[in-house]
Every structure is written in C-alpha cells, then in structure tokens.
Length: 482
Picture 1 (spheres, rainbow, N blue to C red):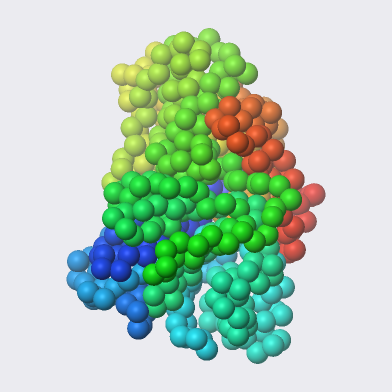
Picture 2: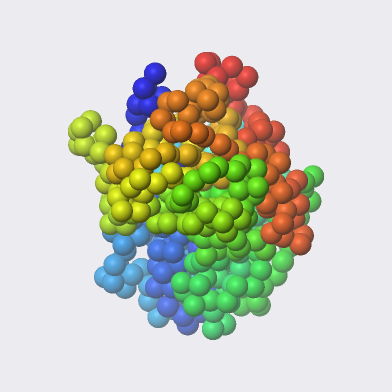
C-alpha cells in the first residue's frame, strides 16, 4: 500500500483542539488584551475565532471563520469594546465535534432568566449525545452541533440556582474533558474538568485577572502567571475579587500527555511542567533507549526540535538544523487540486542540503499518526543527499483515537494500529524506525515534576486505557470496523 493509500491528508499530525482566554478588568482595554492572548493561542485552533465583551449591561459578540488576524482588526475591536467594557472571553477553534461552520464558532452568547451569558469551551464531552437527547426531550432547542451548546442548555436548566451552583450541577452532569469559561455582563467564571485533561491557568495584569488555556498567552499580554486551575475547581472573578470553589474530586489526575508532546507551545508551563524541558527530556530518554551510529541529529520543526536537542545532548551526536520550515504558509488544507495537495509538505518544509548531504541522519519527530508526511520527509532528505535516514519518534506509537478534544483519525487510519513498526519503516522508506517506549515517556515526564508522577497523565492514545468513560465511542477492538 502506498503512503497516500493510508490517508490522503496534506499534514500528518493530530489536529489541535481549541484555546480559550478570559479577562476581568474594569477600566482596562479587555478586548485588545484578549486579542493578543488569542493570537498567542492561535496554534490551538485555526478555523474560527470569536470574542464576547461585557460592559455591565450587555454582551456584544463577534466571531467568524478564519485566523485571529483575519477576524479581528482595529476597526472590529473598536466596535465591540467601549469605555465601559469590564470582562471578555475569547476562543480559537478547531472542530473536533461539530461541523466547520460559523454557527459553531465560539463563544456562544444567549439570554436566559437572569440576563446574558457567554460560554467558551476547550475539550470534548464524552456523554454529549446522551445529554443532548435528554435535553431535547424536555424542550431544549439546539442551533449548533457543538458540545458547548449542551453546557449552555444545562446552565439554562439550572437557572433558578446561582450561577456558581448551576456550574457545580453542570459539572456533575457532564463527563469528558473541558476547560470552560462563562461570562455574564460583569463577571467571569472558569472551570476545569475533575481529571484535569485540558489545561487552564490564572494570571494577573495591572489589577485585572486573566484565565487562559496556556501560560504563553499570559506572557504575550504582559500578565503574571499565578497558578494552574486545579482539576475540579471553579473560579469566580468579579468586583469582590477571586473566589475558588472546589467541587468534584477526581479518582485520578489525567493531564493530556499530548499537550507536552505536541500541542502546547514550548514556552508554556502546564501543571508545573515546562513544555520545552519536557520535550528535551523525551529526547534524552529516547537516546538512552535507542543508540544509533550517525553523524547528525535533526528535528522536524517545530515540535520535534526540542526532542532532537535532548537526544543530541544525551548521545553526544551533533544537532544540526536540517529542515527549514516556511512560517508563512497558509492553511494547507485549502488546496485546489490533487497535484498541489501532494506538494503540501514541500510548502511547509525544505531540506538544508549542505547540512545533510553525505551524512547519516537521525531525524526526530514527535509522532507518526498516519505516516503520510514522514515518508515524504524521508524522501526529501534522501534527495538532498542524506546517506542514511533513521527516524526516531519521541512518543510511543499512537494506536487508539482520542475522545477528549483532539481530532485523531478513526483507529483503522492510525498507521501504528494496523501495521507493525517494521512495516511502517518500510512504508516511509527509513533505514530504521524507533519509538520512545510507554515506560520511557512516563519516566521522562515524571522527572519534570515534583508533584506529578507518570500515572498522572492520560496516555489512552497509546494504551487504550481511557480514564473517563466514553459513552458513544466506536468499537475499538477491531480496527477494520471503526
């Protein structure tokens, strides 16, 4: 089978989920600050962007398909922000559930018994279908196909309670992964799922409070990182300051390990672990497990670079910049012809011939999902004159889909679920192929934290051990039926 036969996609990566940002700061230019924060979170979603702003009386909303810079500009920010603006939430989206439509863009804004609410969500509810059916029977009306609207309808159901109590009840009802921001005309609330699958952190900026998916958004805004929101915690921010409500206690912590492998920006810190250092540790562990006689180590930019540096430091093999990334390429899924689609890899990457020519090259990437891209990069390095190409992966084989907010393929499209490592090596044309072991990645992560162990991460995409019940997942025992 050809590489294209596995799946014809221009870029072989797990797709990002979403990113959320919230700011409570009366007297501050909250919309402008949120714009910078959303820009910093752009890597988490490139399909749509939206922002809701409250001025104490009303909530204004603007959202559209496209990148943050395409959706917002000086004129648009001025339209939705005024001198009375107090609070805002923003969202960047990649659709893991729900179609890629502007109606599904977030935040969602609605009126209910006590005024207006805006809601933005990062993650995936594993019992959304059940809840949607239950709500529909009792008269709920849905205008989108997103999990977020399930949360909206549950909040409306509990509108006789205070908003804090309503969120507590919602947390009991919903299952899955979520970092949720809720905004009234003059308050900001945030909650994180009891397992802590999706990240959410807290910061301060000149008296304002900030909630964000990643700490890099705080840095971009000039805010100071305070702490991560705890699993199962609800925070309420208003004129009284910040109130923390501890709700459900998890049976275990299950922070998504792929945040550290690929999704999060390397300059972010999540649950006390610096992402860049975690990736270097994975590379060091890979060097302990796999020794290859080679001339240089290169990384597939950007997420493979830190692991390649770690491998180089541990092995003593020199690190070289062997692949150049074009940072000005647009979204490569917009390709008019099949011929242009096949050139998507070269649009993003090009081999540096003088660095790899005549060399035995170790190429490190963070993962192989379908194998479509890896084979093209190996071929590119050989065409540039590489004598040998050994591919090393700084994570274990991905053999199970994710149901917690990451857009992985169905299992039959995950190459490691249907082929052996040797078959994958032969398919991509590498001289050798090696993955980091499951034990190795947990060892590497455990070394990065004083409070978290290897058991505190969700590794379901490697093991099939799902920490949170999934109500409507496909049969995963037989890859041919998924």
